[in-house]
Image (cartoon, rainbow, N blue to C red; front, top):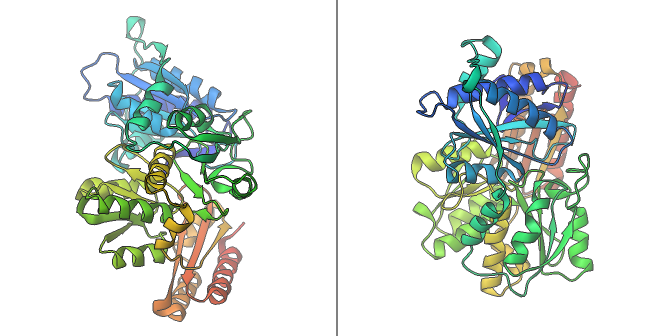
Length: 451
């Protein structure tokens, strides 16, 4: 993990850690790195943003930085992250930038950068940008006169993205009654129009952003309201997105949450049955539930586990020729249709599958058994992040837990790529045992390196 960029872009509290000055310099450096080999005198860069109060401020700073090095900026406005990933290639741009902190609280914000092919930047390019911003490895190019960049707006960005998602759906949603939780985020501008166009009767939740209510007790990190709403209103199912709509979780007609692992299992088996799952392989992460690996084995599918982060899932897919992967958190990548995790595209594929089968989501989701899982987050200091990798007592505790669980469970302890947290995750057949061991491990970490 780099000094500016974590597993999903540069993030921090807006105007404190992620300042306008830093955003401006990231824009300058990104334009220089990503357009190094461009023949365009004025390279083209797209900018999208989520609904946070600080997104306008950071957009202005990025625009200033980009134009100051000669890049022409096209503003997409408030859009989901996957919109930027799709349109950067569709609009023949040199790069795309999304201003969002995804599922984090509103006071945070972030900068995600896409190259001209619509993929998130590899580590090497992020490190080159970091070198320019932090170490001043290259001087910023500061042209004058007609060397400066310009700014324009893409008036059809939302419709272009919605039409793309619709084009990927082979079976419409006519007759379905669904609830959609937009997390007061980016999908507030797209979801109702998209799923109504596909034929569904849409009940909208958390779709009125005010700048500070993004992810506030709503969306894919707070499913309770959606679960209750689906049951109380007798709906077929519900879907929830995070702040920038690159994640999707679902709720069946009984109000039970269907997480990313279940969504992947349902879609992977369906793709395989139609001979559309490349190499009969699904790519997940080390955080994928043990039940997903067992499901793949039981159904003649191969499961590949990567490090946590959809970027690493995507890297494995591209490297080895797979077309489907994702995370338990709801980042699901249908590589035949998208270069990144796309919550609304995932929901459209899942709902289309359910309607095509004329079945209940509850019955379809029984194909996978979920192992009990405990996840405890421990907040740590900056010094603690470094100490975590060196603390011998923590290492010994993890080894002891691993031996106690044996083949009936597992422990995974890792630093978060987006927040100052150590994540302690245990899975196993004995829920009481894993709960006790998780608490013991988390308490030790908090005592040694916690805030």
